[in-house]
Length: 101
Image 1: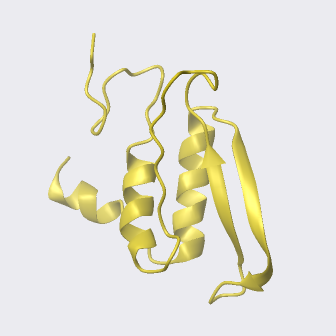
Image 2: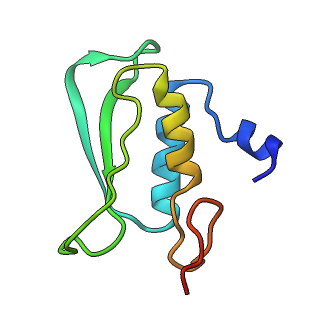
């Protein structure tokens, strides 16, 4: 991944970061669970949520769990890598997931 691609992966706000993650999950047809905070809103009045996307067999004996943005500023770096590295099942090799064939 080139330097401009890395910079472009970072969002400028929580809303943009969440939208990018949801778009990445949607683009590879992943189901997403939304757990919206019942009372607190974001800095721009947006809903705050934990969005969960599952890639693969839910009955698998092991999984990789990625989490970002639960405390604040680290959300921007975590969200950028989660959205950028969402694997595409049609493309076995992505910038963050090497081809294991």
